[in-house]
Amino acid sequence: MGLEKLHPFDAGKWGKVINFLKEEKLITDDLIVQAREATDEDLLVVHTRRYLNKLKWSFVVATITEIPPVAFLPNFVVQRKVLRPLRTQTGGTIMAGKLAVDRGWAINVGGGFHHCSSDKGGGFCAYADITLAIKFLFERVQGVSRATIIDLDAHQGNGHERDFMDDPRVYIMDAYNRYIYPGDGFAKCAIKRKVELEWGTEDTEYLQKVHSHVEGALNEFKPDIVVYNAGTDILDGDPLGGLAISPQGIVKRDEVVFRAARSRGVPVLMVTSGGYQKRTARIIADSILNLHSLGLLDREQATCVLGSPSLDQMVRDSAKDFSNLSLQ
Image (cartoon, rainbow, N blue to C red):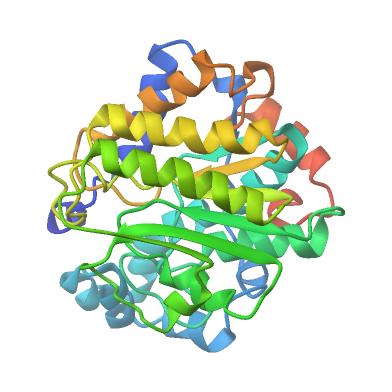
């Protein structure tokens, strides 16, 4: 409807990533899982009914997504054109969590709505997909009782921090530009390993800090799953991130996280989160190609959540009784 022109986010980013990976012959349609839209029942595992009811008001969605004209649209249009795609990405993160446990890793080419908590949305984030994925795993997958969130988006992940404030099962590492949104002092109390960055931080300093703190986090707390929020808004020139990391720096950052987790035998669920430049899709694809070339992704077990009936059926079979998402 042209609404994407009123927002800094590249709404076509996720499809472009998949297309780049297909062009490079890394994935084919039978290696892509079609994400399922999260139902109300799924969302209520974390969200309050009061919050979900608020999303039936268009002006509330307009505030969360920071697109003022959305306030003037009938809510049935907002539900179909704005919230349904976000619910589908949320379902993808939940599914990818189970796939990561089964196969060692999974990437939801989308998701990472880290500013949304159980009862409040914001910062373009309407559903708490990271919290949901972890709660689903805790409640429905045997052997998963501890999780580490490594949040390397340029912004503080205050949504999941508020949700897991007093939960000793979840360890949060968060590296972010200390001067930008959301500046949530209360949520910072949940961060076990806090890395506050200055304006214009560049590759050398950034990668040294990421490496030392990721290693430290995984040595300090032994998780059953790593949820990696891999925002690309750290890229130099991003209008919202305020950092100065090169494309090569982003590729290396992702490598550091995957190498640290996989060397310890810990499954990784990656979501792509923020990134407000057209070139971020190419960088995400290049990073995934790099992970594969280094042997950190097993192609035979590849799982990018988005597309294919054949693998989709296999996923539903392996995830039977896991959630409504896998039973529809």
